[in-house]
Length: 113
Length: 112
Image (cartoon, rainbow over all chains, first blue to last red; front, side, top):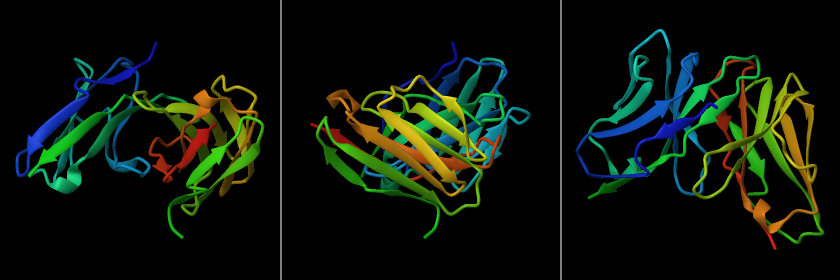
């Protein structure tokens, strides 16, 4: 069946370092991927997305990389800050009119001061 | 109000109670979703409404009953819940068929 997974449940980094959060997906027909950030007590917040016809997309301090050959997605956060501490989810869009997303389990990013 | 709002933010109910969760989106979207988020589990899609019509029911027990009276509002009616239904219930909205979903803050539900 379809599944989206993250490689590590927890990632701990030093403030100022770069963070890389990984995600593996199983559906090679998926055409759209999203990264969400969820802080404690809040709902998931959109960070960045990428379509399958791209392999890299950059935002403010964040970069998403897509490797369709190995079905791998990563989120890079530059100069990680304490406010980046949260759970990060990747999501994969199933091709349909309902816009259904399949979510991974999440990686908890802990930023040490 | 902007984005997606949910009320109440916290709810404690007994197994025999009836309650409703409310979601409102101010983004002009035409699709709305209910998710259940339990500890240590991925988000579980419960229901999808597209153009006010239910297009997906992800094998959710009948003790959860959704209602979408218009494209801006979504309800989840609860009755005779079980303790294992305790979780964070998240509402999201999007443009129909377009993947980016925007989430509300959730309702933390505790069933005693």
